[in-house]
Amino acid sequence: MNIKSLKIFLGFIYLLILVSFLFFVFSLIDVTRLLDFSYIKAIQLNLEQYLTQNILFNIFLFGLFAVIWVALLGFGSPLLLISGIIFGKWIGTILSLLSISLGALLLFSIVSYFLKDFIKFKFENKFHKYIQILRKNEFYYYFIFRLAGGLGLPFPIQNIIPVIFDMKKINYFFSSFFGFVPHFFIWNSIGAGINKYIKQSESFSLFDLILTRDIYLPIILFFILFFISIFIKSKFFDDRFK
Image (cartoon, rainbow, N blue to C red):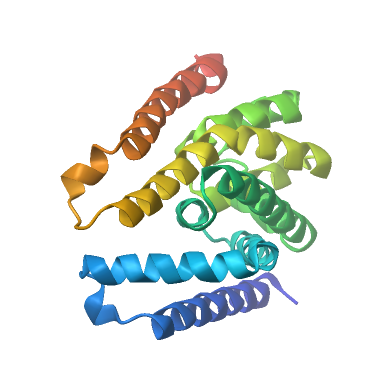
């Protein structure tokens, strides 16, 4: 199978999963009532009751979906919010850490096997300065890279850059896992805060939502982490080429 055929195949599978997921979701809800807060509360209650009936199976199902989603170049942020809404910030954080790290490792393995030469041709010159640093100590610097949010690169690109310098899989997984922790905890906390607000409120107000402690604290942490990421980028990556 050549590169073009593989890209078409992966793209088709990705779209198939996405369309199937959206069809499943929208078949369960009345789209015309999504602005009705009482309807949103009813969905939240029904979802909570369904999840508690077989929590382990639903954790497995979500984890499997997340692995496949990330392996097919899906973005991580929607999964983090959803896992926080569904499972809460603690279980959601642990579940998303494991599943997204495994999904990223699966994508890395697939691309390493099928598309290594193509990825090197496409990205090696473009990200040359980052790759030079990552090669020096792949675990440490890739952990820093993940901790800094991938330096603003799209999530799928972050996941495949190590293909260029043949990073060890065990280093890839654990540096990603630990580097993800702060970001994933913040996003899951926001998701859990949204779920709590829906459960406790009788009407929706965006202003009230933002001023909820379970929302504004993670948002503050997000901005703190954002500025830390800028510092990390400057300290560990940009400064070394001045």
